[in-house]
Length: 183
Image (cartoon, rainbow, N blue to C red):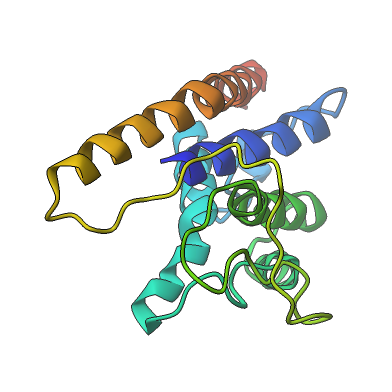
């Protein structure tokens, strides 16, 4: 939950920040692939990108290459080829939404070796973990009753910390799009 909220908050922040003072863009001149043409689509894309690094669980590994600034850079570069207008802003927003996952995992509690994330891959294969562990670990012993209680408490903390920022940024994106001319 926290990863989705952080992806939304960061992606929308970059979207709103880059659009402040910019000339309004006519809805008619937008590319059909412009992720910012509807606010709900941008929310979905940023939330997805915030959670995307955890797909490495499907390969039976975790906190490796996908949890790095290098992977976030690859996401930004790849998005520049698929999103037409405006490429740089979109690429940066996508990269930052993905990279928010790296930051949150670095600030999290890790109980499984190797502890931390491979944050600087491909420059380094070293694992990094902050001493400031703001977010609790995820209990994966789902058959235990106390595991569920622990995870509910951890999710509640993530929502309390990241939810207000995500809602505020999503609201700003929606407000900005509503203010643009619909020629």
